[in-house]
Length: 91
Image (cartoon, rainbow, N blue to C red; front, side, top):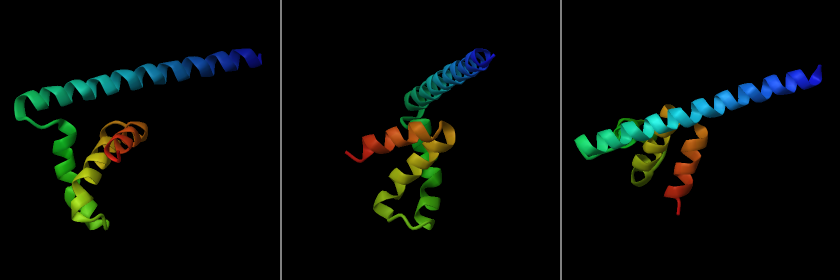
């Protein structure tokens, strides 16, 4: 009885993981397409869109573009991917 619930939860977790991998691959493909056509990735373009919002919430202008890009990544993908981007940019 309990084992059935554990297996059902595991199946749901695997489905979510597969969807997340597919979604991140789709975002990467869109970024590559935009970079080829426009010279900027989709997340960079959204970073420019979020640049004023980052400045309005108190982030200094020197960091606002980077913060806007992180905010866009969080919006498009999820928090996990945004935190990975933040770790890459902070080095």
